[in-house]
Length: 205
Image (cartoon, rainbow, N blue to C red; front, top):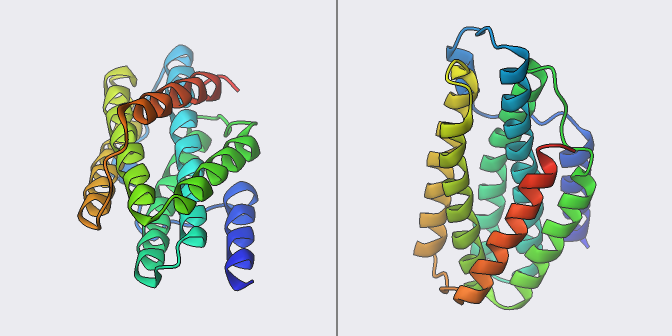
């Protein structure tokens, strides 16, 4: 029952409260840059996608922590979730600085990711960790692509994305070291297809 209350609290905080970062945003070291309206809209769309990714990360890790019976693994997921809260806060701050908003579909994204996390968790700890590895590697590649798409003058957003990319790769490596199973290629392809739909929609809505 306690785990259910924790999961519900995490969902409410993610969707309806201002996230609090434990670490200062990498954007803080960069002075405000002048962006054209089109550059600002482009950067905002990309950062909205990244914010959705962090909403999903909160849902995935919370669900996986709820599903596992392994106390050490539950602690692993909970710690990773807390680290992802920094990313959630940083992307939210960038959206505000870019005079934009999060995705209107965040409750839907959260619910979908939470369901996937529960499913992965029910399939066993090795599969659950394998899901983390593949998710984080795909997110890392996605963030790397954003560095080529963000306006060159938006150094603040670039700094945030660069640090997030480093952190996501580390999360994948940690999950692999914890005993992750290698997922079938068909599952990886399905995950990429689902991510493509999410990123395309979230950039606009």
